[in-house]
Image 1 (tube, rainbow, N blue to C red):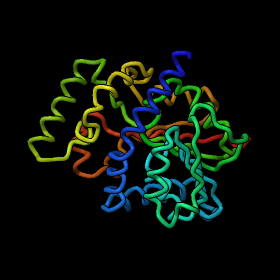
Image 2: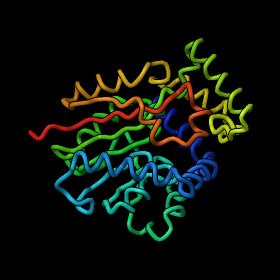
Image 3: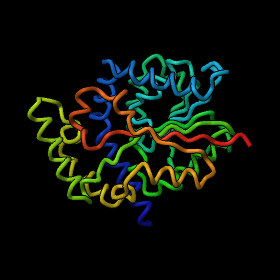
Length: 264
């Protein structure tokens, strides 16, 4: 088996073990103000790009759905949603979390770097906290651009999650986040949610190409090379994160990479 395939299998195994705990995080988001914050964010973004079209007409692909949080919200907005993930255990959690909406969302097991969809199948491709965890993020972006319709939009929410493994300043900031979380009594998702698997994820992260690269500059360069008009919103975390997340992840703020596919 090739090195790259080995990484994929390690990822699948890791996230299989994490599925119940990650699903707990998603259920918390669904039961708190995060549900409306994220839904409002999607409404703004989709209205901005498709002002003349009702959401019911939009075909949305969510890549790396995990336990289904984004897919559920997008379906609640009325969009036609296809949600993919590499890990069957995550898809099982997603279907359970979706409840009565499960039959209205197309959940599929699929590799984010090798999509089986035809060219120009979707109006929007949306993802969260996935790109950093891919062995070939450049291939993923190429695939996501391929399946976008002309005039479609890519919305990728991510962060420099494991930069502290490669940079002393980032390590010091990461340690401050851990101390601040403990001092303020905040549930530290960065460590506690991963539990005994934390070292496993760090080992995988050390081998992922984006862990040591400062983003979103890399993303903008890649998407521009694909002929897309790309920009980054590095303040999106201010609008979609909970107060607890802002404390736990202060040194790794979430950014939004937004890219448009040309109409011709």
